[in-house]
Amino acid sequence: MTTTTDPLLSLLAINDGYPTARWNFADAVGTPVASPGGIGNAVTVTYSFLTEVPSYYASLGLTIDNFTAFSETQQAVTREVLGKLSAVTNITFQEVSGVGTLTYGLNTQTDSGGYAYYPSFAYSYYPSTGLIASATPRNYSGDVWIALDNTGYYPGGNVYRTLIHETEHALGIKHPFSGAYTLEASLDNRAITVMSYTNPPNSYFQDVTSNGAGGYNFNYYNVTPESPMVYDIAALQYLYGANTSYHTGDDLYTFDTEHPFYQSIWDAGGNDTISLSNFSKGSIIDLRDGYYSKVTIESDPLPPGYTSSATPTYNGTNNLGIAYNAIIENAIGGSGNDTLMGNAVNNALTGGVGNDTLQGGLGNDALDGGDGSDIAVFSGSKSEYLVAYNGSGFTVSDSVLGNGDEGTDTLNGIEIFRFADGDFSSQDFVNHAPVGIPGPLLDGQEDSPYLLTTAALIAGITDADGDLMAVLNLTANHGTLSDNGNFTWTFTPDA
Image (cartoon, rainbow, N blue to C red):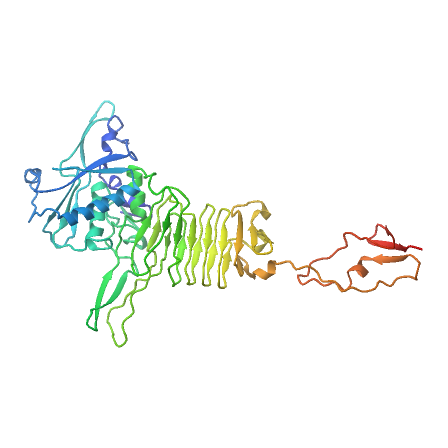
């Protein structure tokens, strides 16, 4: 058993002794057994809701206890789950009557919320060439069974998560904790992959509602995923390709301040924005693909005079992931103290109200701190950047040393510049004009030439920034001015 952080090694059944566990294995015909082709190909998968136990179960010696067909509500929820899976990958799900490639039914189970069978093909090959000659799906592969006593047919409910989990099994995704490759323990939780059995840290939620009679109802539960998570999406897209037509417009992603969640974003194009403008608690938005954000949602407080032995832990940590290769361009904070982090493209980060921290990363970014005392973060030392003030805001470029990796950022509403070697006030980068104190230049006698020196010319002039001052040009009235070539000038008055 090998521990890994790789989603493909830890989640793909084809890497764990099930080489045919993908519905595009039929495309492997004509390719070598040692390296069957078709991985990444789009596929159409039929599905159906069983009205009876298929006859092949008896012939296989498999028993289904208390078979029950899905209700209309359960069917609708299943279609919704299939829609979320097809949104991220190139699988077209097609509903049929009878027995589909995937089938769904209910039965009685012991200590289980559901189970499913991997895709499985019987295949033959030519011994002389080692090429696959035929591939036929086995009849039970792709069957999904949900426990009759499992509840929660809604996003975030147990059955909803179970439907995602078991359908992923039926598409060729395994548990991260079993097999030849297992996921590193710190990643083996449901915020990373729905296939985990482990709740994420900080997932326990306290929900307090009025009972309508002057009292309260208290509900405690672990928040659970309502979509495929980042590692799930990576594994599914490896098997079947990415859905490049999903969310190709300019999308705005918003969230309910009262609804705890775990979910991931797959977005195939456009100029997109995550907005938490309706949130008052400080959050973290990280726009990098494969990374997670913290959309801060806290458990309900106990009413005055009430106590509880339960300790709610959910606070939104790692509740929003961005799938690998998904690009979100912009982030908007709320009225709390937010942290906004950009990615490799040109980002617009808007802090809003609060004392916010903004880091553009690579690209030419626009950072707007808004109200409050806001910080712009840069990865290098101050000397690696050129900072220019334009009268209302700043531009910061790392091209001073010629690498230009972080581009040129435009800053407004930023009070603190945070470099690797320290924090600097924005006022440190505002260049104030020198202030002169007029006075007579006394050198010589009336109507006689007299000498002007640089020291005399700049005497009495002050500069708040301590800039080096020099005389660049002189003009004279009522006389002529001669440049002596040694930073002195001779003024000859008119007669």
